[in-house]
Image (cartoon, rainbow, N blue to C red):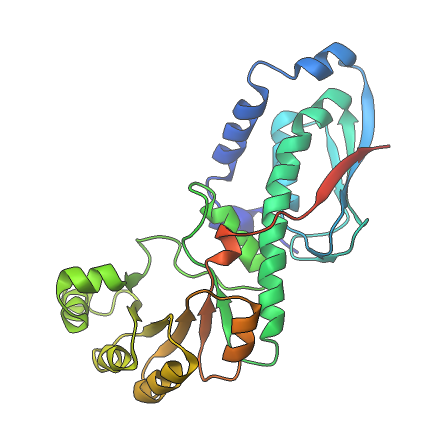
Length: 284
């Protein structure tokens, strides 16, 4: 069972995002519903899947409605991370009609993005079933939404990479260029932090991979290499570091990588190019 504390650990700004969403959509009020309904009108509604995949955002929807009106009662028929089919009823909602309508679009916006990310992640994870390779996300997220995006990746069966610039050393091509060499960048990091942080480095060639392994990198990212170059790099690394593959990852590429002796495949597309999952709200 997913507890709200699990969500808040990875998305601590959830309440702030809900506040922004409410202010953006409501401002001075829902003038349509205010004209049609009184405070005493009461309704029942449900959120329904119109897609097939992994649902995510159930607890976010609950949090949205708790903020709008604490008298609203929600029954969740699925938890985050559950597989759903088209026409499945995800949640049932009872409460003041105006309050339900106020939260409708905000709740669905959160759920459709999060479920889209979870579904795409799960498709990639299933392609790697039977291997030890894990699917990683990246920092290519909507500003402010990183926690929710990464939570959705986790619910889809993926693994979170670093959250930001603060929790893991990631030496990329521009760091190397500005430092002068791979070795110089690695030496400076070790001098500053010793073994405090995991150190990953991005390399473009098998020769660079060997230098990174000799320099003591914990994880070596093979970026945009072809399969032949990857195999060369894997041999040169020779088990001295974990190996991550990155660069234009799609289903076809995953199929070509699943037989390699690697640990991770990272994909920015999980969050930067995701297709929204189709969900809708219906009144009974």
